[in-house]
Amino acid sequence: MFEDAAVAADRRASERDGPSRRRAPRVELQAAVRLRGAAQGAVEARILNLSAGGCCLALKAGLFDAGDLVTIKIEGVEHWSGTVQWCVGDEAGIAFDRPFYPAVFDAIVAIHKGRVADAVR
Image 1 (cartoon, helix red, strand yellow):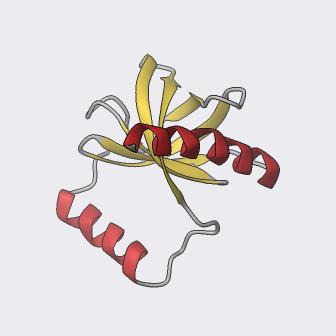
Image 2: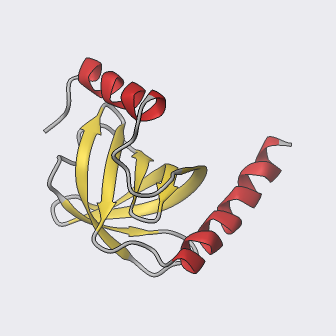
């Protein structure tokens, strides 16, 4: 179910400005991914930020609901499974079923951070 936009804004502000409940730091990325749900099939999405335990995605609004089981294909990694935690407009939060190992997480960030830097130039 979708969060109210005001609730989502408050949640984001508290995560940004106050102590975070997150277990791992997030890294801002702009990486194209393919997300697949049981009812949705394959959907193109973009990672906005990534941690070892989850990510925030930009995708077409209304495709997924909190609780949906998904797999995500990120370049540099085989398909990774997770659960949609929240959806607000055209963004969704995914919690991975198992976190990335630190070396795998660092490799993903290195692959995609370089591309963002190149695209900005």
